[in-house]
Length: 423
Image (cartoon, rainbow, N blue to C red; front, side, top):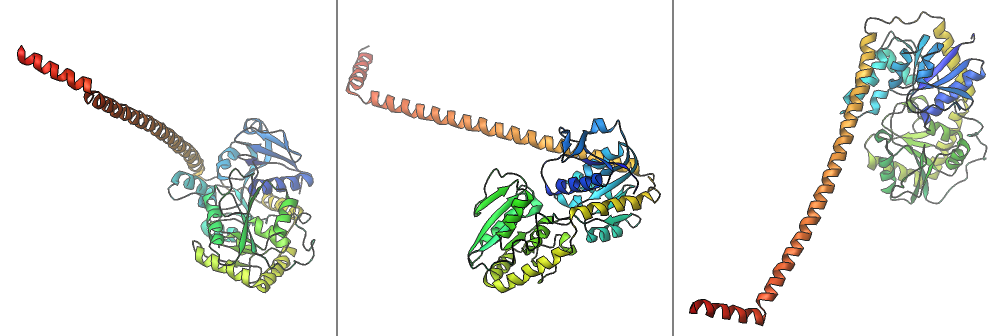
């Protein structure tokens, strides 16, 4: 492909699986001789990340690009605000599913991406097939996320040693994200009848440690994460939606099988009963029974581990994934750009409406929560003051009672009575 200038438009560069995939593709494209930049729409933009130039949105608006690549629904609008010859949407999931039903504005904005006049790159064939059903005219290519074969080296530790102790369950995900199912996964392990222990791995350094977890690990390097995979017997991931789900694949490379929900991405690599097991959504008793089965049947666990390593052998590495991304752009570049159509302004307006409405609602919620907390404090202060006043009132009554029952007071009262009668 001829030299091109590309930018990946991202919200932020905080550690996450999605950001690491974007940076990996950007590095591979840069290594292939293209001029690649990361454009950050929110927060402060550092000068470089992994050797890649990072620019603020304001800086990027002054530049010219061949391709502007949106990487999240909220970056689609900014991508259209850049001077670029072509635009592409890189979808790592169907992002509308990240929001609860009551988050209607965010859902609307995320779903609107699918109607944009852009070409699409997705991370799984199941996404490409579903997009073809939803938007038949859309051009879409699958580029699977690569796995670092050096860090997650197949067979590097030799055959998996039989483990007869408690079933070592690895749970991966951000506990604060409801659709990751971290709490449900820990609950399912806690209900096991067979001995077990849980390790929780999160993208960032943990701030709290959930109950019933042996250890919580965050901010790991790929090599450290690979070692955690090797020290585990099974990966449990009960996500609601995953475009691909890299942790199960990384685990496959070191012979770690998985138990997952049908979150979508597993369709591209998981074969039930061969390299992992699929359990139902919201079926915690069934998940617990599955884990108990693996704890008792170590031969089954071994067969699944062997199947996992077999699957990993044919999975692409980051360089292969980067070449596939470059080939996708080359393919799209040889075709006419999608027609904007009359609805483009309405779609971009939907993004702005969703973003602004969502922010306003979040602001109102924060204000309401702050006001409620302030009211709680005032109620508490009034309650304390009332209790103190009541204590003082009771003490005063007690003191009055003590005085009125004393001998001098009773004597004085009789004297006053006699004086009144004589007068």
